[in-house]
Length: 52
Image (cartoon, rainbow, N blue to C red; front, side):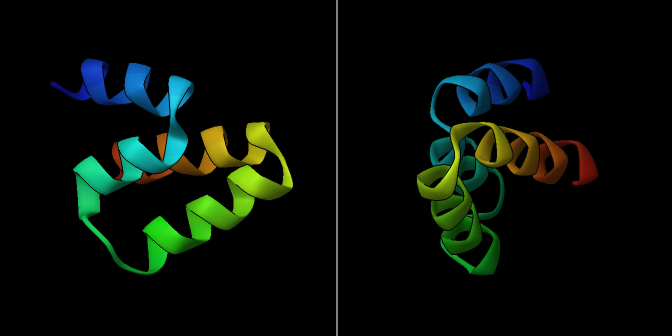
């Protein structure tokens, strides 16, 4: 299941974070990072998925 979430995180980083932790601090932070730069959003999303 984590492989699917990581693939989703690469395509749509906020969706990957949402599926892992729901709407919370990490979700909003990931949206901000994705808006500022797609790569930081991906890195944060993968970090959140691997950490849990």
